[in-house]
Amino acid sequence: MRWSLAAVLFFAAVVPSVAAQQNAECLACHGQQGLTGQAGHSVYINAEKQKASVHGSLPCTACHTDIKGFPHPAHPAAVNCASCHADEAKDVEVSVHVKAAANPCLACHGNPHTIVPVKDPESPVYALNIPKTCGSCHANPEMAKKFGLPNVYSMYMDSIHGFALAKDGLLVAASCSSCHGTHKILSHTNPESRTYRANIPATCGACHAGPEREYFAGIHGQLVKAGDLDAPVCSDCHTAHQIARVQTASWQEKTSATCGNCHKEKYRTYLDTFHAQVSALGYVETAHCWNCHRYHDILPASNPHSSIAPANLVTTCGQCHKAVTASFISFQPHADPRNAKDFPALHFAAIFMDLLLLAVFGFFGLHTILWLIRSAFDRHKGGA
Image (cartoon, rainbow, N blue to C red; front, side, top):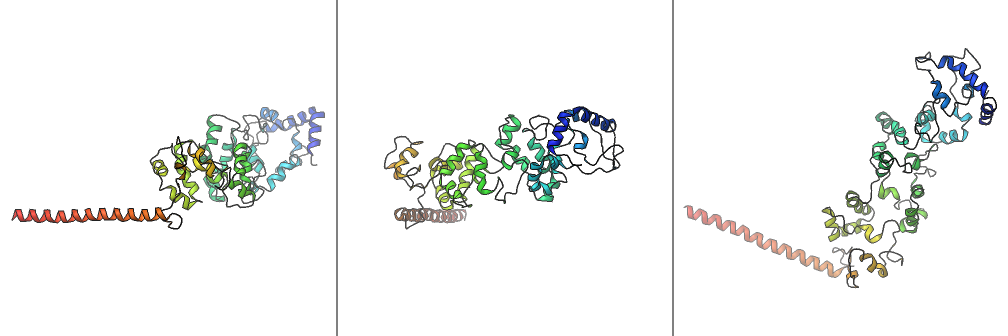
């Protein structure tokens, strides 16, 4: 006999005394500490915790459907959670976890006789406990080796989300399930996955609605909407698990290089500027890519709404430089002295300066060598 969820709930609501009586009969044996089965594993059930669990109002046979009475089979059939939780089981069946554990339900929810509501702090899937629960596999060296998993648990715990959840106790902070989902966790290569590249902005946008709106207003978001999966998404700039505070010096110093992964030529010319050179010395209050191009709503200079559109340059540069003039904004921040076609004057000026530098160092180098030779000759002559 297989119980439907409706039948189980009806049975528990209408005939609670029957369920309680049946459970008491089972716990007469299984409530004894130290009780073990034929395989030597414990079959003890804590009566108090079982009664307080979400399954406490159900008869034992609602789950152990092949047991008709005592004595029962030595090896009862495995419990089928799908008999009540059909939708959740359907999602788990297509998830990446179905191959990772014999019973994925128990791997996350724990002992079926002591399962408490999700909002109970004792639950393994309570918001504060989710990283630890997921980390039981994702920080396990054997599991990592078997399935080729990176140790994302330690990365997450050191991130801004991990600190907010574990250190500050903020239940609204993003945890594993916030990004990956709960039961239907799919590979990031699956287009239906919440972590599939095209879906990442919407996944992050579930919490960061403002940045998501700005992102899709910018060129990167527009490219992703058009189907260009090479365009940057949230995880390209912020990473997936090691997300840091953007106000920190370490993040700001390395993130211009992140932009440079795609914009190689622009980054190379940026490194020649005063802004980049003082940034390399650890000075935070200088212009980085996002100070001029903005953070999420990045637009090309040809767009009148762009922060680097000619009409907006006075405002953009004026964030740091007071009394900006028309002459000031004529400065080319990405001028390339190697590009003779677009910057001929700068190109030949750079060649002249290089030759002048070589001539000065060459002249004084030769002068120093001749001076040393003359000094050695004079010392030798004086000694004789």
